[in-house]
Length: 138
Length: 110
Figure 1 (cartoon, each protein chain N blue to C red):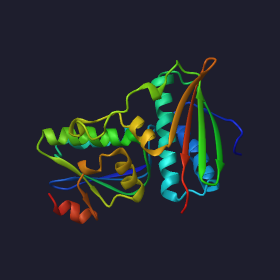
Figure 2: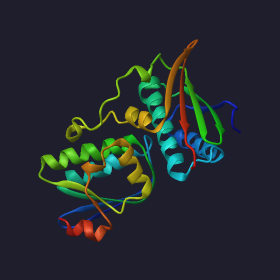
Figure 3: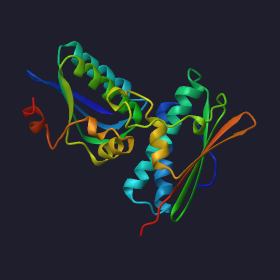
């Protein structure tokens, strides 16, 4: 189940299945429920970004997901073939500034707040986003 | 996502449950816009049964909040689930929404 690449259609309705994969891996990583949920939230935001800003109107795009877990550490790789986009190059807005007028742009801050490492790389014609979370139970 | 609407004299109550993400938040947005179109200036979101909430839901909540504030109204939360509380906290916008322990307390606040 884990370590093996899984391919999902790049559409909103498939994000839940990707989150389920993260939840199962978080159990292997021995994360508590709250940390597992936070990781699912971050991965869901990354997928929504790929679908909204990468694939846009392209319904045929795919998201390849690789999840690795060991006690205390969870790594999720998301790969897509949308146009090049490095989310780590975008300045993370300070959610506290201009809060009263804020209506969007919350996805990236959520990803960065939850995950310990967020790495982007380009492989051929594909974007790869690697998200890593470390958490020990003590 | 499950959603139901109850309209009272001074407030509209939207009870929403399940998963609210990019695939379901447009439905929530439509229902909230309908309530505002019907003249409701105050809205309660009963979120006790929400088990996942992405930033697309937050965007809908913030847009609604902005529209209602422009009309002198407001949107408040009733009995949010732990997942809702976690999402608001992680996004750093928890302070923007008044939270009540149950629907009755939220209704009484208007």
